[in-house]
Length: 210
Image (cartoon, rainbow, N blue to C red):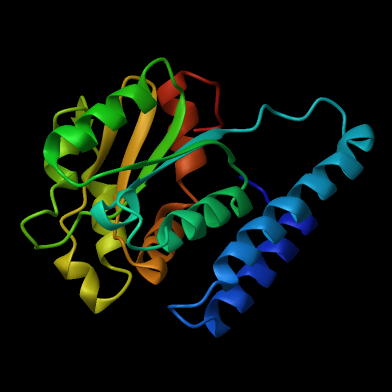
């Protein structure tokens, strides 16, 4: 999917702030709001001059974290993922938080995928601790796996080999697991962001050039 100049500029600003922000600070909250505002402003300004644009693809973000649910930690990775997905051209229509655990993850994903056409992307629960059960919950929901997406994400950096995240389809939705770290979830999404729009359209039966 082609990017507009405002989208490229907003994402460049986001990446710059991300590289300078300390892991424990709050810059991502400001970045989240700023990126959303930039994209909304640019889309409003250009709407009148662009004839009949293609419908914007939609996405939903799920944060899987006991700590966030119990208020013990901030949802930095969820906020960062919403900003990254938005900057890539998707309209984020939902952002939910659920506790770790197979049934918690499965229930949240089922609800988010129900009668939805687009991307459903999670952050958290893909590692090796006993509560990292996002892949197991995801397997209860998806119809088919998409191993190429998961493999591409694992190639982002050496630590990617420790991710057990999977990807697949559930009805007309593409479901993707990313790690719970702020840097890791954004990097993994970026690794597949270029092919996701095409995949979503194929799944929905929308005519493409493919």
